[in-house]
Length: 347
Image (tube, rainbow, N blue to C red; front, top):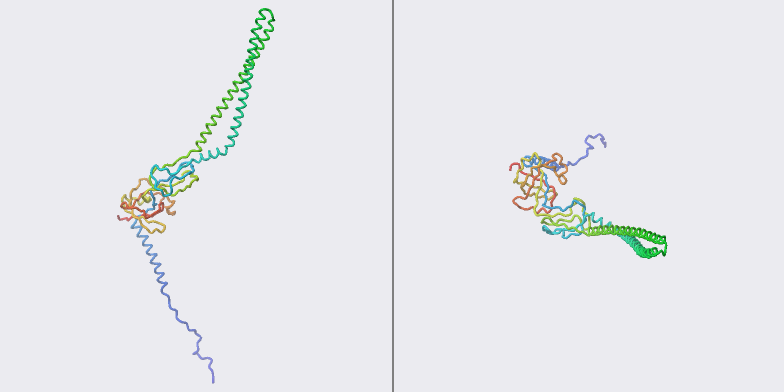
């Protein structure tokens, strides 16, 4: 039996199972294309249909702040309390007064030392005046004695019992004592003047210390200028509120939107026009409102909360927007948030 190794019927091809083609990826690509087209059309059509403005949802509020540094001593109300005009909100002191009181406490030992030195000095002056008054009394007694002696010796000279020289010696003694008396009176006057001056200086010092003590004990009270509800306390008891820091706010009922209309769109907005307000941050809410007031003077847009990419139009016309038909936006419980305002072009 012969084997034919050149048999052409044998083949080395490997059989492969046919792969089924996927079709779902085409639908994904198609959906993405539709989404892109829809977004593009929406962007193009919305600019034809709507006018837009950027703004803030605000609440009517009165911010409590000072032009000087102050320290809060004690709050008379609690956060969220209903406040009426004339109610005392808190007590405070000016920060400079607090420093004065602090320095006064630090200088208390120095004041005691100064008072001791003053009393010692005054006691020395009084002692010196007392000594000189004793010498003064002694001099006056001696002068009186020699004056009497002079009268007696004048009689003796008259009857030639003694010589005039002895009378002259008595007169010289009287002159010396009177000169010493004048010097002593001058010293006493000078001491009395010094004593008066020292007492006057001490009175002024005590007066200033009294004023200092009164100032250090002053408590000022802040009275609410309006009705409303007290918001959170941004400065706690004992803390310092620096210039222009907001301590707390008095909130009134009623919210509004302050928007900035581009100057090019000014003719599209009129007082009384209805608008829609889109809230950010996933609120998924649209508020209804109307234009209450369009102000005459344009101003720089406050971009602190608005989109940072706003660079094309720095100026805008200020517009106030209020709830439609007097309805409230109480469902929105926060304020000072950026919003987007839109208005139909054909209304």
